[in-house]
Length: 187
Image 1: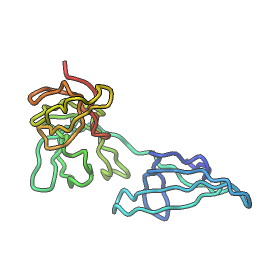
Image 2: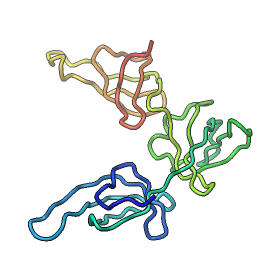
Image 3: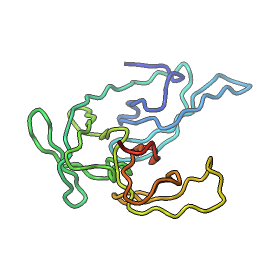
């Protein structure tokens, strides 16, 4: 599907120069002289390169639709992650760096969505929020106001997050996977 250069939004998947790119940031600019354009920061989903491109309103670009398929995370083998197709029970191995920082939040048996382009997996979507246990939390500094006094804590997967002062070591919390942020105490 072709879209205009000024209709590009963060999160769009575009076909550009024979590659598949995910839009990270966009900035609409209207200079005093000349036509308006969209400054687009993109990351190549195949090889990880990043680029900045200007698209004018007259430019058109191909927006790619990815197929999404449900998989279950099984285990890690070295720097590879093993997933199982929930329909066919076929297993595939993907490099851990395909997930980036979110890989730390993978849990055995977790349901994930693989995005496929021409039958090739190019990204893995984890649930937005997961439960984790605090294994280490700093003590509260006396005298700080309650409104802004978040303290650092370490989760059972090694990820550091900021939590409210009443959260102690051993507490189960809900964490936003992509923001690495405390959401709430787990039920």
